[in-house]
Image (tube, rainbow, N blue to C red; front, side, top):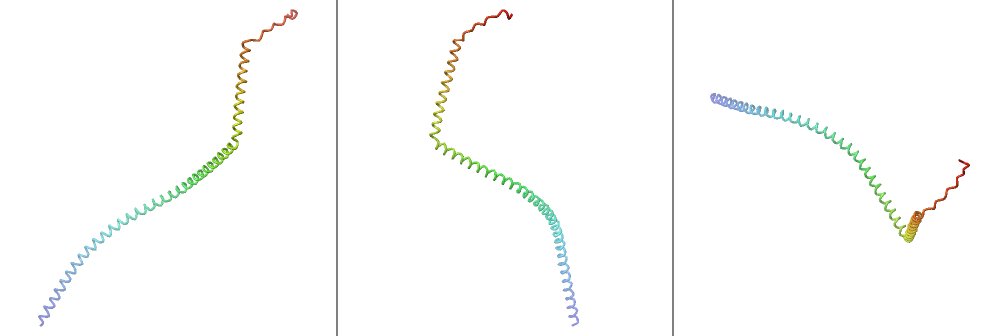
Length: 161
């Protein structure tokens, strides 16, 4: 019986040895896995640091661009307001010209008979002026045909010499 007790103790010790060896192998494999994981995490940390730096730079550039766009937008708003004012002024000018044109048209229609009379009288005046110029030319040509007679010189007084 004692022998059985030694064999069982030996088997228990062998099983414990196998358990320790398998535990050592497992822990060694876990160690390698953890080292690989640590390396991967370190590389990932470096990449994240790079991404963080680039993201920060990109954020600064974006903020600068946003400020620039806001400044230009404010300037553009003043230009748009000025153009809007010019458009309004042009529209008012067009309306004024339309009113003036309408007024002139109405006045012309109301005074159509008077305008016709003025045109007739101006035509008559032009004809009279042309006839007067023609007669003046005829009179001048007659004077050139018949020059004025020369007058005799007064007698010379001999005492004045």
